[in-house]
Length: 358
Ligand SMILES: *Cc1c(COP(=O)(O)O)cnc(C)c1O
Image (cartoon, rainbow, N blue to C red; front, side, top):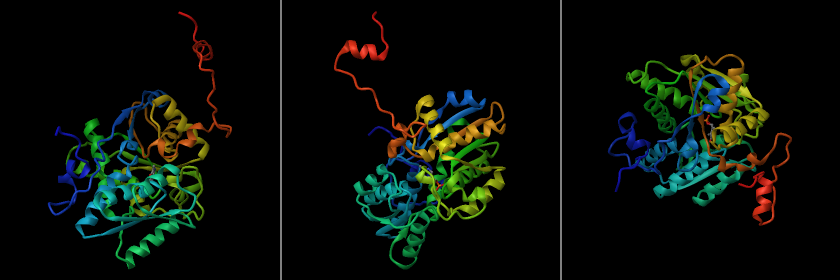
């Protein structure tokens, strides 16, 4: 067989806590494109790249942590795993568990996860329960179950998840030849913010980079506990993947902000959707709403004069647009785009398209 990308555990085996005793469960995650975004560079005066994590096997960055968490669970003899999820963790856990031949149970907030993600978890044979509560309630129950029953927790409070996720920083450094000046990520539980910070720290420690990037994280305005400095009881935003009121990696993220001279900001839903449209229509990258907050955050910081001219900025966009596609059709006034209907007639189609004869 020709050589293909081997998944993050094999590609970065020397930089992860795995050994010959670790059974590697992979669907080929990682190796995602770092896409130059001239349209965003033109809007901000920076040199902007988009790390498109929607290109992972289940369509989100969660796969980087899940390959590690499921492989280590197997190494420890687990037969079943459990997680709480706003959607993407459940899709990823379900896929990796079934590939490994073990069971995944997933707890999701009732009615609050995108159809694409729900479909994935069910297709991959997870035992999926909709809990009458929010994500934070689901995580409390998952932690209780893992403490008292023979199930292995694969949420990002499991340190293996963050270990796997840090590989995204390694990939950025490999492509750019150094760390960027600024790295921007969406923030829910702040696991990914923590993972990138750690990945860049390790790259600096081994001399692969000359600097640590400033880590910028953005939360939805209705769900911004880190920005506000207190737990949010009923988090609310259209960006379901970051609808989290009590982030699991809160302390680690604050430490990483301190270390990197970073920043946390909040963005309202209207600005998230505006950024979603800019990314789809001007850059050609289709993401779910939570991911678009990286773009919105960049534009907000640029407007505030906080993005130096010519700075290299990497935006992580975390999940694929096909997960939650209905937002693409929603217009700014709240109605849905209705594509024009035409007769099956070349002349009429040409006329509607505004084409004139050759
Ligand atoms: C999980 C997730 C996030 C949030 O990541 P955290 O590590 O919880 O901060 C953001 N976007 C998408 C698409 C996600 O699936």
